[in-house]
Image (cartoon, rainbow over all chains, first blue to last red; front, side, top):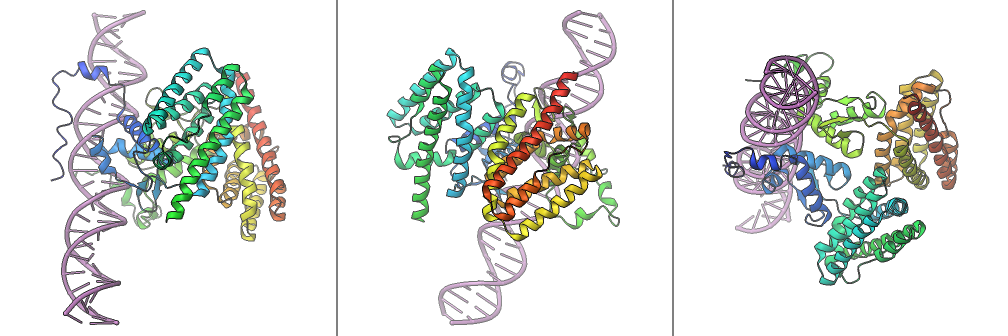
Length: 239
Length: 239
DNA sequence: GGGCGCAGAATATGATCAAATTTCTGACTG
DNA sequence: CAGTCAGAAATTTGATCATATTCTGCGCCC
């Protein structure tokens, strides 16, 4: 009974050279990981929602092993948590956890902006400016999903410039923890009051002013965390 | 019926090693993860040494899937790294990476000691004192492996008291990165010049002096990182 | 010296086993 | 007599394994 759609995902391909040779570069578990990561980051998986492994295999048309490995990886990064039994779910943020995330972000990300200033090039600035322009358009259009993705892309791109992979990776793991709640914030307050210290940050980067870049990043983080805290407090009060 | 060689690991049932079948509480992938984690932390796996998945299945008498999942988890935590091919290995520390680790440790662990001061109890202090006594004995006896394990246990125990799971988890991931090099340090300099700011730290905890605990932890970290940096520089010069 | 298999290892799949949640039944109590 | 709760069967879901397939590395032959 439960085995019927397994065959229609890959038809009998007579020519194994054309399509296969064009994209054999993506390992399945990595593709699954990226999709699930984005789903967590951009709110496609709501906090508290249980993750079923078999549901993902059918949803992503993937095997069981890649899904399991992606779940393990995301669990290690804090994007998912194993509830006492062997079920995984997107963790719900509480104020105590949020405070720790804010502490770590304020220690990590301003430092990354500081370091990026030393290694930035004109091409990098153009790239960041492009992202920020699209981001402002998304805000103006009320495009929540676009805002989330572009905001994430802006910070990720900047931190990659800092040439500090450990710090950048740690900061990326933190984003996985509060990403789902960012979606909640936007759903509650819309895109009107979103923080945008990116202009100040870009100015500082153009001038090579590392201290100003650090300060602007700290401001941006504080603004965002205040919004998330407000949404969380409201949720706790409504319960 | 096709399981012939899989049975011989369970055949010696009446003898000593079959506690697992009597206590089926531990999932296999978790047991494998813990063993590999300890092997990385305490230098049983040397940096640069390639990890073969089939070697681990036979070495740990485990299946293939649990080993794969443990490798994914450790890779996500930075304990292992995937080199371009699909081989994994214990990463070798360079000075640039070490600097980032020091930066993060100095931001995280003193804060954890600071927070632990508020929540500590007499039982906790007794526990930490016990560990530190054993640690001093290990140093006096030149027991490198014992020193590594007890030093790790001391810090882990303290950080668990701080009631800040995100910070503690992040700090634990950092230990996975410089753990292998700690073994190298000990192999080079012995246990004579090892840092031991634990006495100061314990005094501060007993007095409830959070600021002193923070400072003592920072000193302990700096001492240890200086040692690791010296060993790394020596290695780089010898090559 | 370079292209071509060949061995070995890693990835991915489906099947099988075990555990847990759910559901259904039945009895007991108010 | 009805409602509720305990317990057991059943279904769902996670964990593990054996196997097939694919890719990498290396040696060999041209």
